[in-house]
Image (cartoon, rainbow, N blue to C red; front, side):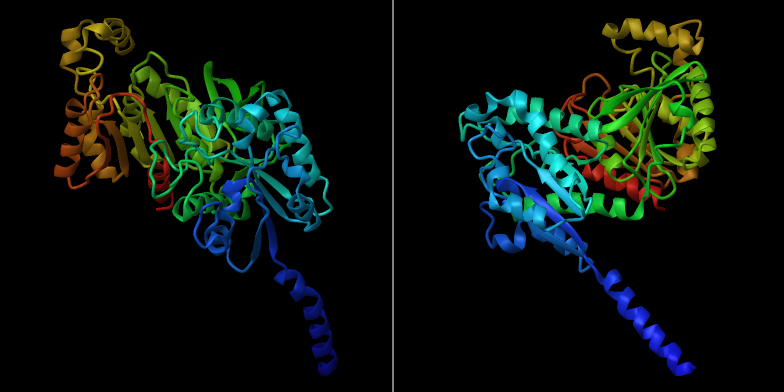
Amino acid sequence: MKRISIILFALVAMTVLPMHAQKTKVACIGNSITFGHGIADREHFHYPAQLQQYLGDGYEVRNFGVSATTMLLKGDFPYVTTQQYKESLEWQPDIVLIKFGTNDTKSKNWKYKDDFMADYQAFIDSYRRLPSHPRVILLTPIRCFLPLTDWDIRGDYVEQYVRPMIEELAYKNNIDIINMYNVLGNTWDAAVMPDKLHPSALGAGSMALKAYNHLMTLERGKAVDAAAQPFYKQGATTFNFHGYTGYDFVSDGVSCKIVEPKVVAEGRPWIWRARFWGHEPQTDIDLLERGFHVAYCDVSDLYGSQQAVKRWDAFYKRMTAAGFSRKMALEGMSRGGLIVYNWAARNPKKVACIYADAPVMDIKQWPMSLAENAGDTQKMLKAYGFASEAEALQWHGNPLDHAAKMAKARIPILHVVGDSDTGVKYKYNTKIFEEKMRRLGQPIQVIHKPSVGHHPHSLNNPQPIVDFILRAMNQ
């Protein structure tokens, strides 16, 4: 009997083990950037090869990139006419990473721009119809630094037209999208892009890491339940947020927004943006790729006052009641710093971290010290219930005054500031707060942008911000 059991176990193992050992097949489809044009020892250092190294033995990554190809069927070299396209379909991949659009901006191709989305849709469908039912993931083109006269490739068209069209396709098809446009930043670096168009091995490595992080989120996360009706979907209007589905709704009489990731990370993490919805969204986009929800509760023209804090208290209760993490990342740009810090001071145990960008830390400096902000000053006085400017000047409830509470709670804090900011001046805001926190034994991290004013906010490649938030959320 024992021998029979051993034989049966062996037979089961023979049938089960190969299934477990089967590798996930990842097809990388694209033009010369996917192919790895100009990279020394290309076969080992193009982005698909480096993605293979990140993914390890459980995956098989193949590069089906072909230089100079277009998505446009009427383009000078349509990808669908290549042998590699045929081979990629025959391979029956489990995951397909698609990256096109750069060559389509050449003048001889761009005249057919009105066909771009229809041609791309047909291309997506050709993979979705495969018996392997692969997960199709769109990649936005990387930034092009070529002068407009070189190679007849229009980097401005990539930014203004191609990228939004690909985001629209991701939204309409409810498929994954990875923002590669910001991965190499907005300043040309010969080390990462020698010819201003094709990434080096170093640049390809950044692309590979971005793709890897998203694939790991898909592997470890949980699919969004389309049938579920959380509070924010009831009576909401949907909208496209860079390829992701957003919900515009009213909660307790207040305008709010929530954007869903394609896959929800463990613990249902979220980032809570204060003010200026959609402005410099690259941090929010990257966190969506990593399984975060992005939330917004309108506190416009309340300047972090008690009324604004109460609005956020109510919104927080609804979010946590719906199963979202009890600690979140707070994101405050400019005057958004007021509500971020004033709410955190009231609720320090509910905050995982604070990312503040050129934040207002003292109403005496902004808006009160600037004559051109007289209108904001009057609105602020009304929001706080101050009888006069003199009363406001004596107030001690500014973010600068919350340093002791932040230090006691040991909340990780990151500020991004422009050193030439003349509106929300570093020396009267972040610098004072930074010095206070250092004296309290809880130094904050500050990223300085030399010769940059109040705008642009954020970092074009937000990786340092995203890494900071992920570390804080995982503590």
